[in-house]
Amino acid sequence: AVQARALAPTFIASRSVRGAPSGLASPRFRNFTAVAVPVPVRFAYNSSALTPEGEAAAREILEYLKSQNAKSVRLIGHTDPVGSEPFNLELSAARAEAVKNFLAQNGYDGAVEIVPRGEAELFQPDDPGGYSREELHVMYRRVEYQLVE
Image (cartoon, rainbow, N blue to C red; front, side):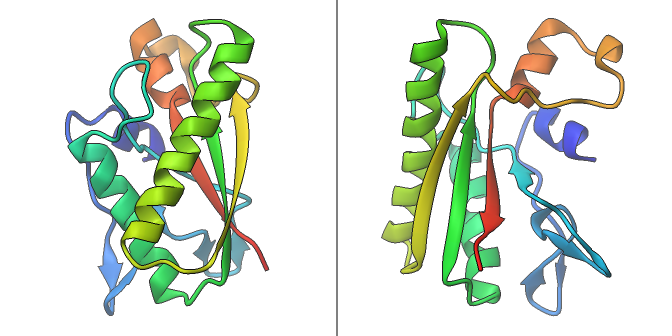
């Protein structure tokens, strides 16, 4: 589901249960807690500027944080392997910072930690051979969030 969501031509919002984001937007499901939640936050090519779909994804993160009254969050930025490693590390930091700024501008007042990963931790799809190079790169470009307790 995460892979399909990342490859969709427009942002697909997660479900909401009783007014709270759930499904792919939530790190908690029954007795399972995900280490990090990948969100297909989209940016302009080679930039940290959020696209309209990127803003929708960042808004979903914001709604989840607010619904959980989260006091602290870690945003982990990732890029595809195109470009130099130093450039990608800087770009991943700038993209996570853009999400942080979006959250602050829209009312999130909790602590936000930025963790740039660049191309170091590529997303691992179920069947990499089933995707084109560009589709894989789309999945690699992401911001993940972790609740910090």
